[in-house]
Image (cartoon, rainbow, N blue to C red; front, side):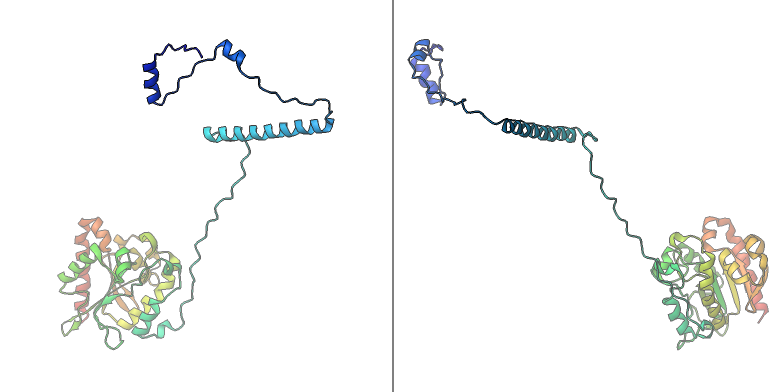
Length: 316
């Protein structure tokens, strides 16, 4: 074997230590001296049936077509190309509809219930869809009831509907609106839980709706219609000396039977007069939430409170 790399013994020894094998092409003489490789003889005398040959070609074509399709699909997938092969349509996800709330008609005889039974009925009411979104019903708050009987109060304050804080706490007029109302009551030497004394007083606070409308939206007529019998019974049992209606929906709910134009009349034009509900005097004013957004209206609310106090004092 001729050393075409021209390496000396020392260089070859170094390469051998490094594990590098040195290859050199064989010389022509070496090739001529190499033993011949025996080749296999193939007998071509036997004929192969034509159908076998055709089937072999068909199998080969089928295999090639399948491999070609797989390769094409792989390229399409890698490139993000759609439409090379038809994709099987995927079924759209099935959205589960939220079940409708179970509506149960109000029990009969609300107008005959005592205070305790009325409270229990309201707490389990399912007469409209608000029952499915509330956290708590909001019956009211005020002077304590005695032995299941309605509290004795001079003042009944009626609001519109519970808000988010009222729904969470189960008490009307909490949060910033509640603080403003408490300040109003304090200015009249009253409180939301004060009892009636020999000098009078005693307050109860309730809403037209006993459940919060979602998102603090306005009450719907059908919701007011379902809840109003509860408020009517509260008024009948409390027998207050005067009612303070706060907000448009409270005013409309209490006066719609005696004042047909109440729904089309702005609240500002209804102020300054004393109305009647169940033969009880009613004074209308703005809701504390409205006053918080329109602070100059505080003076008008104070004027309405003074009208109510003057009427109450004159009736004694």
